[in-house]
Length: 409
Ligand SMILES: [Zn+2]
Image (cartoon, rainbow, N blue to C red; front, side, top):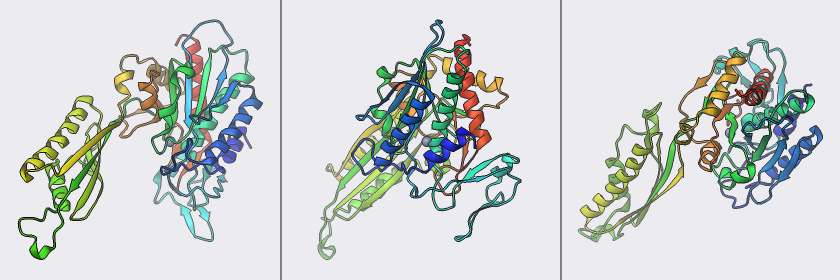
């Protein structure tokens, strides 16, 4: 078994599901365990400055420069945690030389991974597929990213004759709950540019993300016995419905794509006396993002005016911003990645990402950090799978990025 595959299976088996309800860093102990296992592996292959920061949950390490040209320091980042899906007792299955058939994942539960349902399987004929046993996720998001980075680092350690500058590595917690990168130490990381390894199939590359905010609207109603409620009852639920009706009905996730932004009513709960609505607001364009926040505030004010008193209050906080606004100042990391893919014959698939990545936050901390593919498919569920060949291509892309950086692009 290749080292890449052996490491992947070993890491995949560690339950690192993050937990939004936890207040610790990282949110779950499994992430600490995995960081320690990885730290041992990094030591064994010979990386330097291996450091697990217990305050922010990031494991960092360095591949020291072996030549004197002072090219920019590049970093590679992946996350330790897995999505909010069953992650207890993960048993990865290896299927060699895939021939296009349905793969039986679980005999007892009769769970199969079939190309009838997932035609993307047909892209992997002849390759080695790693799947789940049908009862958990696989966690290729993002353990594939971790092992691909280690594979590339090990390659350079085994080939000291190949010149490269200083390369930094970071493996961080709690990406899936949008929290990990908040505590990332960008200054200590030293890199001028970085890449997260956290996107999908081979070729996927993102340097545009949403701007993101969350709005919470609290509504105080007046609950009166319905028999004597005339002119005195104020129904908080109805006011919430009024607010939602004022928002553009076409600008919702289920009706938008590409660069189109939206409001998503994410949570709505209440009684006559009190109701609460939570929206998430998303837009790639910073101006229209700000306009959306203003618009929802205006609607809240308008309803308060109609009611004649301040029944509704709104709180909005920004979650992350579009990394493109940082990256457009300096396309170096984008050009480097695209050139690396071109050199390896990988067709780039570049699209505005309708979400955020750890790189969104790291970019705003001063290190432009686009998002590179991992090679995985069907993330966040029991049908997740990845090809060994896709992981190898990703590692090769990292190796080529480092080579191009050292060669002065
Ligand atoms: Zn991920």
